[in-house]
Length: 143
Image 1 (tube, rainbow, N blue to C red):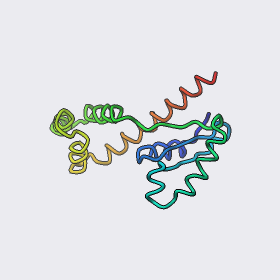
Image 2: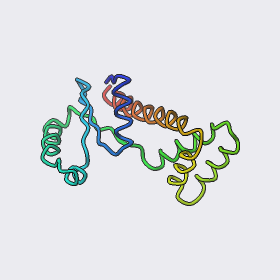
Image 3: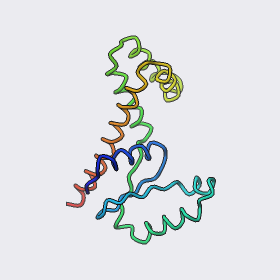
């Protein structure tokens, strides 16, 4: 299954925001959907049901891509912290990851720093790699 760089980028961002992504195995068409609860909360439940019905009617034609687990996300933050060149900032980030509420406090450290854009670039790259591994795993299973 082949995905364009644009599709890969879109899927990675969507998964990071909690959107559920399905890729049609033959066409590469991307279907993004909310959870049922979120669809109901936002008033798009009927549209959601139609979309899901199409996917459920042909489950063998779609691959569902998964979002990172919290463990995966933690490892990405940790990898980023280790590659930060500013040793003071690196120490802050690593200490934050070992402390109370590591996700919220890591975000706070990043948001109040000059490496914010570096973090977003790094995170996007890791998200895209995560999606690519899922596609590669799927392709390996199909062989």
